[in-house]
Amino acid sequence: MQDQAPPTPERIESLEQLEEIYGPPLERSLWKEVDHIAEIYRPLIAASPFMVVASVGPEGTDCSPRGDPAGFVRVLDEQRLAFPDRRGNNRLDTLRNIIRDPRVSLLFLIPGVGETLRVNGRAEIRLDAELRESFTIQGKTPTSVIVVTVDRVYFQCQKALARSKLWDPNSRVERASLPSAGDMAQVFAQGPFDGAAYDAGYPEHMKKTMY
Picture 1: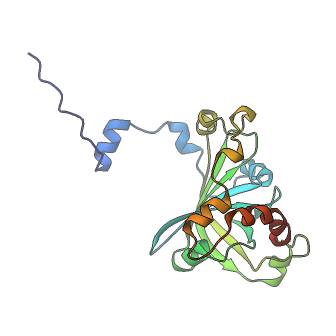
Picture 2: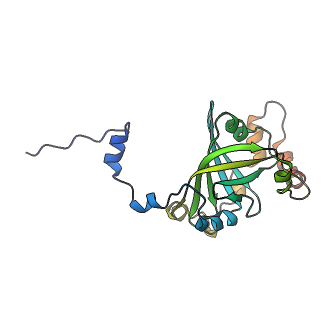
Picture 3: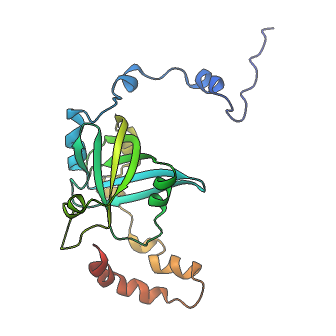
């Protein structure tokens, strides 16, 4: 009787175990990663109206969506890019993290495109008047601009977006089928809060506070 292989552990706890189970990375997944903003990657950044910023601080990790007209993330040179910090809820989670730990990761999405672009680097918060003013929209200048010095850049293949059918019109979810912003806020409100009134007034509020 042949010896049976040891049972697969219920969780992976070492790099050796991870590599044994998954095997080596595809070679092309390694050589597409570079230490600068390659010329071939610049059109992807210019076409993206939406980016997710991941940061880390003493309290843990954070992931923040950022969006503006395509091209809002600007390539300054082959090692640096910049994007405005637009008006928000003033929690400042990303900015607080950057001050204490400059490491960030950026994920660029482009409507209708399956590939995404990933950037790892170190960020700083800049107040340069000329730089801030260059990002002015509708007469509103951002309070600060985040400048990222790039460490690694690479593109991710289409599989995740293909599996999710993110850009497929047939995958759209009816907004009314999910809790509204007012519904969610009312659950967590510490005091009287009219969720329905919040939802009714939000479109006008957003017009006034977008920038």
